[in-house]
Image (tube, rainbow, N blue to C red; front, top):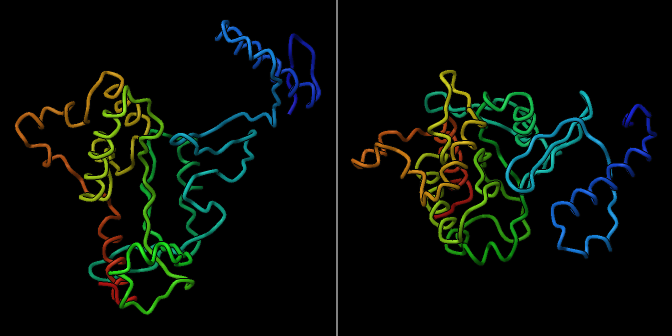
Amino acid sequence: MELIVEGKELTNQESLDWIAEKVKVHLTNLFPNISVIEKFGFETKAIYTGVSLHGAADYKVWVGDDTIESKMRSYRTREKYKSFELTGDVLQLVTNDYRPSEEFMTQLYQDPYNVARAKTYRFNKILKTAEYAKNEESWVHSTAKPGDTVYSMRLLRECSLSQFTFQNHDQYISWNKEKTRLQNKTGQSYESWFINEDGTLNYQLMIETLNQAITSGKMTFAETRKANEKNHLAREYVNHPSHEKLQEEQRRLDIYYRRQ
């Protein structure tokens, strides 16, 4: 991709070099007392026209309408998974080619105010010795042994605390405990308070609201809710639409593997 600077059209390499030079100038202006910046050179790998970001290190980039696969920790972005839905007591296969991170990151880019909720999907992995030993009570009577391919059920977590800057470690620990407790109870954390009428997630409003609470020094999200003053916050909890499916399929896998 080429840039036009002061009326001059640069080649792709000239564009990359121009950006690298400006990055160094920008950092020098930001940190005038850090002379070591002058000793380093910067390299621009590529130029993109759009990006969606999630957490501290998850991203997906675009050049016009073209894109590359997302980078999302703990997710295999190239793989396709089986996704399920629960109809009554029957668990039905919805698709064989669900790509949770790709769909999520694309929707963040297209419309962060209306993001479709994630689906339950089946994830395969190698049962490692360390995991087997750590959860030996669960696996000891199982048909699976270390080295076998085993399945587990997963659900993409839309809310990530890693994208926020906490004032201190105690504040982070407090928020993380609250988030974990909500996830265990409802299958989601703060998403409950940012659901649109059509069931989609207002992701943009969620991260802006959480960031405001964190930067203002709140130790929990509950402190921002009036219902918490009368211990009625639980009335505002909403289960993730795929939470029941996740639990049911996990229960079936426990039976299949004879886990306790």
